[in-house]
Picture 1 (cartoon, rainbow, N blue to C red):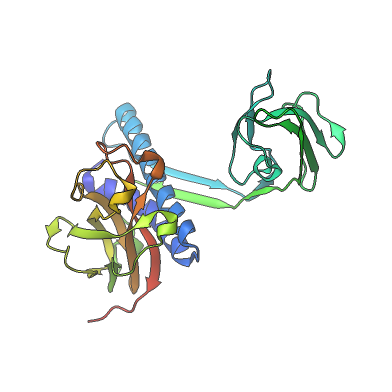
Picture 2: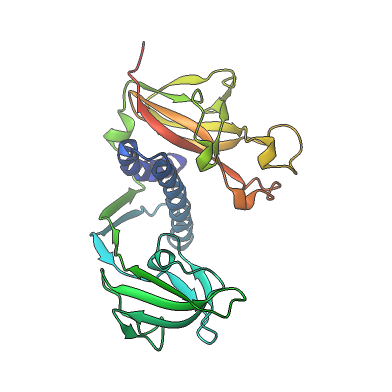
Amino acid sequence: MSKSTLVAFFVSTLLGFSAQANELQSAEAQVLVESLKREIGNTLAEIHRLEQKQAGESVPLTITLSQPEYSFVEMGLVMDPESKTVLSVSPNSNADALGLRVGDRIQSMRVDGKVINDFPNNVTLNSGSVIQADVQRGGNEDSLLLETVAKSKTIPAWSLQVSSSEPSQSATELSGCGYVSVFFTPPGTKYQYPAKVFEVDGESGFHLRETIKLPAGQHTLKVHEYIPEQMLPRRKSGIEKAKSLDLLIEPNKTYHIAAQFEPEKRLQLVNESYWEPVVWKVSESKCRP
């Protein structure tokens, strides 16, 4: 697969997410979309590598996936089957709503009043089921009674089409301009901090500009993070290396850039996995001459 068709391979994937991401009202949801795009891109790159290794350079690759909307009910709990000790609780799950914590020892579990002897293997949950648990927490001998009402999780319908063919007209004939901006301060409560764009498509000298006008289409930015020093006390003074951010600029839109800090990786300074450049907000901005 040539470089141009490999670019098309990713562009056709990103196009499908771009329109949806622009409609999101939650900045946190927009960050999750950017993370999802990176994860899909990495997975597609590995699929491409394996197919290229198996079938050769010239074999075209087209993938079409779809999934209708569906709902399910689960506990979101991992437990040691012998000691009945909670090992992990999924965020926003029914186990989380129940109030279970890692280290709790479940003495008994009831669903709609029925005792579950082999929990969680033989439990069937329905939306609206009443879940009750008696647990021992810490060194306390007295048990706690926890209770919640089970809720279902809905997976929205989705579809994905990726092709290694040349870019479609929608990707190649974008006209007008858009903007990237670091003017506004991102929401630090979501571990998003200021950043600077130093390069665009290999051209440097953009670090003094807070808003950059770009022709509509695909661009590669080089971004530096400006995460506060108190968040990384062991880091040497000065900013770290720039990271790349591939961005499809649509006409009449401004893409606000930030550094997404990962607190759990704050000590991983060598490989700089403690942050990623992200788009934290997309706003409407008419292309000016």
